[in-house]
Length: 122
Image 1 (spheres, rainbow, N blue to C red):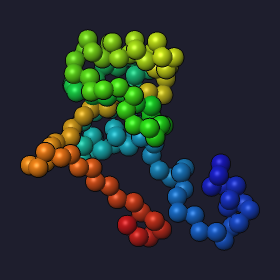
Image 2 (image 1 turned 120 degrees about the vertical axis):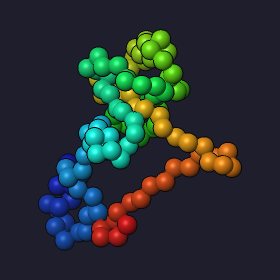
Image 3 (image 1 turned 180 degrees about the vertical axis):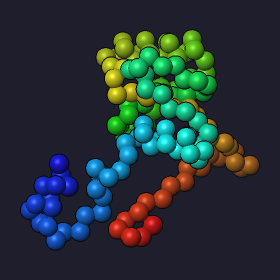
Image 4 (image 1 turned 90 degrees about the vertical axis):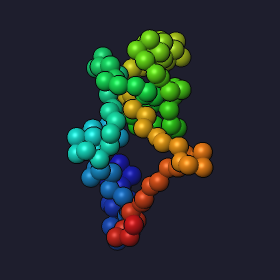
């Protein structure tokens, strides 16, 4: 891929990310849940699994555009969301349902925190 191509062309170039070493979204979310870090579940839609609890949203596993649905609150809404996705030509394969666990702050705003590692710095 791009990493390997760049490494072959410019072996001394500093590369900050090695994609083959990081977990994709679904295995990462499952691992965080199993480790007790996340309180919510992620399920693969293509396997026919249903979310164990709600609310959830549906997104492409490898997408960067965020949720493809509004928050889904129960089994009936989940089934309708699957039908809506199908009607839009979106396959079940490669899509996941992720639990929603945001909390509003005392000021009424939601916050999302993140950190990035660049080389050896965070």
